[in-house]
Image (cartoon, rainbow, N blue to C red; front, side, top):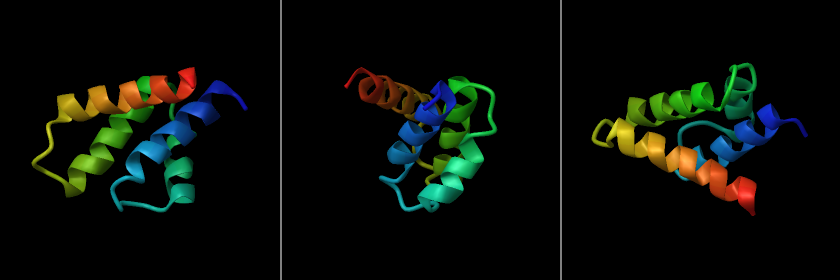
Length: 73
């Protein structure tokens, strides 16, 4: 797997905790994006589009941290 695939899969796992989109639809959304920052921003956008009361900054931190924890495992 390349780094883009790993990042996309990790963020799919992060978002799947909230029932927003199917895994394969999420992968199709994340894979074309340029880097982890773009993928995290998209994840935050997807989550906040249906969960307005969640802090974007907190979500950004959580998604980034989640990715690095998975990568380290």
